[in-house]
Length: 181
Image (cartoon, rainbow, N blue to C red):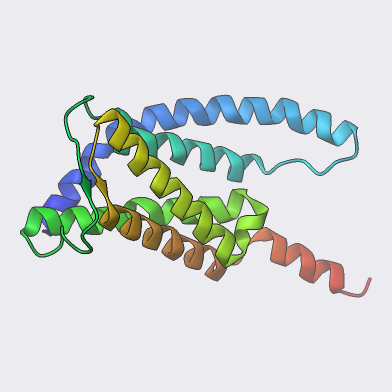
């Protein structure tokens, strides 16, 4: 199973240039938008967080949707845990679905301030997963599987938990604001 996971993770690296291209465009656009916001005395967007979020969304779309041919898969599987335990290949898919959304949960909480609350991040992750599964169903580029929704959402939650465990700049700024001057 581990060999499948490693091979599959290495194979998705081919989508990194697409994510980087979108990241460059988003960073340039944010530079313009942030200049405008600063001139109007508004807080600028985090370029690193927002760029990372859009880059990862593009990579997820390529992995889950655009890398497959239309009509290659069709159907709905609403049976819980139907993919686990069949063989090592299917078990690897389950683990990969969790791994795929861990960075998504992290960058979601980093880039979208309301997603720093657990329920908001959970709902965004769930909505993203259901949206991907629905698009796979209507384009026949993948099965709509309840297991995928659950495992992807679990990955987003794990990513959120990693985010809240990692010290970040906002908490440092709050602490500095409370220090006597």
